[in-house]
Image (cartoon, rainbow, N blue to C red; front, side):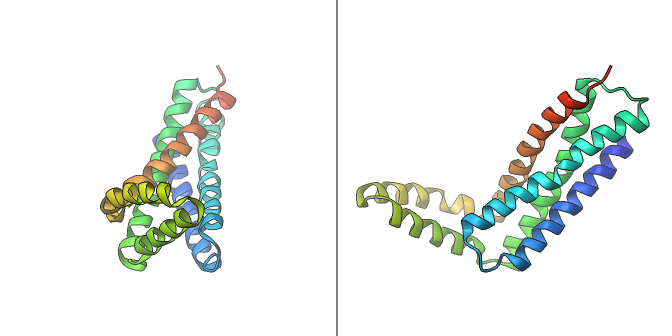
Length: 168
């Protein structure tokens, strides 16, 4: 099981890093909302290795059988490796490769709020955003948020995959 988890976790990690770097090179001129969609799609694609890892374990290492709990454990562990790799990559990106990203994204968010809300609501939302600004500008918080995002998606994929692939 350990070998399967490490192998497919690293496959997922490599896939998410490659897709991240690919989206950086081709998505430079795209809107933030389009980049966000590409980002979530990259997460889902790279987390497909959860399904393949569980299937590999069931078919090649466990005689064609795996119960729901074991399958879920394998999927969660693969997701953790992928999530950690992406969190680390995001940390490096916002800390070293593009240190102005958070400021640029914050300014964009303020402009979006200004364009979409009435003046009174905008002031309230801006105050909320300002209160959270320091927290989100921290690269370690970015690591935690991005890792958790990938892990939550991976957990959902692990649940679905475990239900599909369980065999007694």
